[in-house]
Image (cartoon, rainbow, N blue to C red):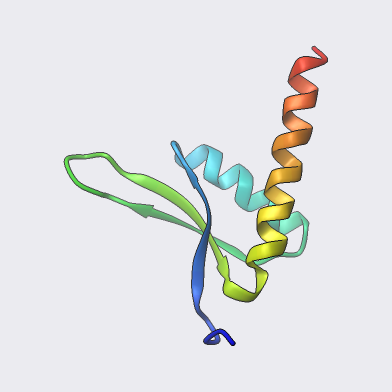
Length: 77
């Protein structure tokens, strides 16, 4: 059983733009999410999309499906 309000990372990104695109996709799928920027050490920041623990499996599946669709779209161009 998870703690209500417990956020976990669903994905890590290299840029805030990529994370916001993922956030938008999750919002369209009805999965609440938050974009978090961690400054890290020596300027090597990370950007993650976090979701409630109970939504993690759905969020990961939705993001994997989006990546798969994006890959197919790029190979068809």
